[in-house]
Image (cartoon, rainbow, N blue to C red; front, top):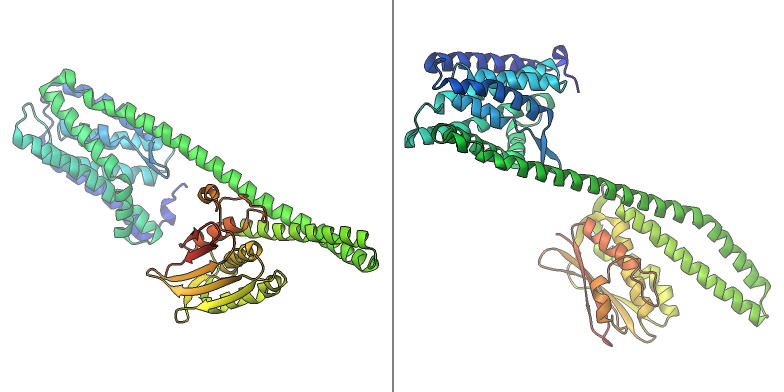
Length: 453
């Protein structure tokens, strides 16, 4: 976004003028205190070297995280502040940043502010720990302190425009930026200080700290590849959700027509056993397909990244609704369906429709696997972390080999589509809860949902 100076808030305009002005004043103080004398004419070679390095670093920032970029320009800027005379080093760093920002087409207000930011930090760093012709312990400490001062001031001033422009609290933005960048900034500062010390004591070994740059480059390439892979995966998942939604909607209408026609045929062919049996089988298959499509829609809904429609949900009422909905299928199968509200009325902030879908899928599975004469118990209790909903059946239990992948999609048994448990897990996870199963062969299964309190 191109910044137009006249349209910016007054406080931001003051910062854009004030920070570079403060940088010029501090650079003048550093020049007066340290002068322009060079500890060796060969150090002047750093002026074009640092300038070019800063421009290149601004042109090619690297990623240190999936969502975080950083410029390596802090390294040559700090080297210039430490090794060049205080009257030259900060100006070299600031002009390099100005040229780099303009090279990448940043606006003049942004470029001037960034150059002023660098000038302030580099001037103070030069006054704190500029490296002379000789090094001793005190000089080493001052150089390290200069590196810390530089990255701290640079980061602190760099966050200021964002806080003024967005209105967000400055401390919060500073904490966020520092947590994302401090390892890289301290690494660059350490490289700069080490480079400066070696330049004085062992010039031939001075380039050794720069071996970190190829490592950063390789890390950057790996992060970029991971970012592309994540974007492709997100695209695939979005397409999958759209496909599930579209298919379920497109098939629902003709399926309803088929079921209506089958009902007409069933009434017209009463008294003809063979035909009636064929129609009954077709109705059963159509009903199974209808349930599967409903679950596909529910799965697509659960996968959506839209915010949950949270409300205060009474779990006793929710479980009573589920029991009422499945009372008739359970009675038809000869299975008893009961509730057991152990704790006092439990309420939780949740998306009522999604949570009901999760519990209903567990009850539906339990009713289908339970033999006649047994019962399914739907209970509500309060655990150590929050409300607990449990669905227990007296069915045959679950095979050990199925348990590791039980909640994966389409891991179906002989009596289901393999979607109900996947939907339940996805819904529970979106609510910040957990779902687990306890089962034993011949002794039934208990599925437990734990929700945050």
